[in-house]
Image (tube, rainbow, N blue to C red; front, side, top):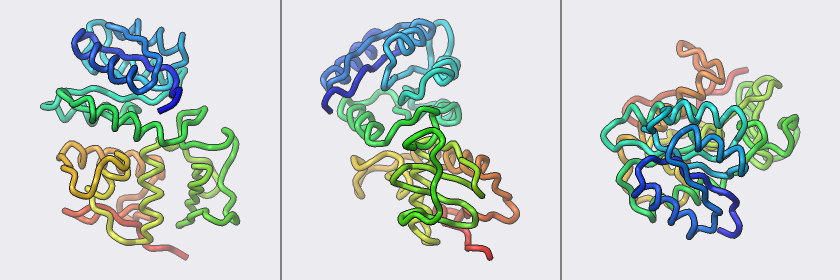
Length: 252
């Protein structure tokens, strides 16, 4: 990465904090570290951080509250650090607006890969799906716009509308929805969708954990809520039990 910007590490464990600091510094970031949540929030605002690594368990306020405060003023990438044995941490992190999570203990190579995957996704001013400006919406007549039952996605500008109203999607939600629209009704397994969210470093033979698949389920649940999906008559997202998801049939 060349001049990726400022990173803030919010972690009370000095050993983990120093490890993450070293990995991000080697990746080209200007790194600032904090041992508490309140200090971390201040650093994010002070230095206009591009990316934040955030521990769930902090001595003053927990990571979810820190994330809530960060999201009030910043659309930076947030990578949550969670306990390997606590799946609830993972699900809560994604539901709270984190871009990704990584479980402890982790390898420096995996942290670098997760950060690189996030930075490949465009950022926005409002924290939703990326766009050229906050007011830009997909033009249904443009080539490359995928449409389905009133839903329109433009991957070039990373904008989405539903019956003309702009949708505010996270990066992962947009990527998942785009993948399903491109698949045109073909079933996408949870493992397929994990790779969509994680990026290119998840090869076809890479291990997909239960936590990874549960994370996809959380993203899909968030998508259904934002779309206003009716579980009795779904218009966009169908669950294929034991396998994954596919696009619902087109309606007249």
